Image (cartoon, rainbow, N blue to C red; front, top):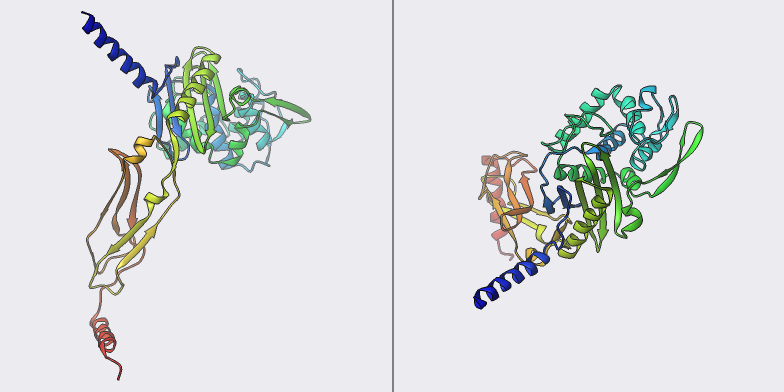
Length: 377
């Protein structure tokens, strides 16, 4: 009996040690994910593909539509329908003249639903048209479990996403410096019509977590507390999404927990040495020489030390080029992987036409070879 208890003790001890080296604390939020900002690789997930309401995280997509359709210095007249929409507001009044940039900040810092509506009416003319633009962008980003019904995120049956897909939206949004700057701003002044308004960011991590770089909070009765939180530490840039938290404290604590655990378990590795590609394919009966190409692209990836040691490279290219073969023809694929997970893959195509030799070309080659073999007297 004592030996049996001893075995159970060691089993439990092993389980505790093993689990603590991965993620030490179980989070309370029902759905969450952490991705590498540079590559989109998932580093942590909990029910990350579960469809849920997103509340004001919606405004990250609204921001994307804004910066892709407007000059940020453009003056926008606030439609009457945009004001007094309910929920959080930044303080717009009908017919205010406001720059697109100030609307962006009014939407992302205090989460102004009125600013989101003003943007939607300006770009789409009405809410359904603007939602259509949002869904079109989601389709371009290959998001299959995301649907938008409005620009602000108030609860709607056809308005939902997943933690994973929201992280991909956030990653894309951060590719725009204007959005990146806005979500990292703690507070600022803007001009709404004839008055100056001070805006304060609702993301408390910017004030309490030293590695935080911004993003967006959200809340509705249907969605509960939501958060997209980005952070940077030791050259590693992460994006965390937490959906459905019961309280604001839980969403911030959970985000900080999964970000910290990810920083502790992953490092930033430069994969560019693995991306050096040399292609030498024999050309049969063609005018050109053998097809040679080199390729290298700096790529930063978040990996554990064990994963880095298991990286392998595979090349799958055609064995020969039989002329004629024309520009755009598929040559092969270069892949960098860890076990079955593909970290990087690139297809290569012919960049020039390979024409078939004519009898005249063969005659020229014969003459060239003859003169090259003549020894000097």
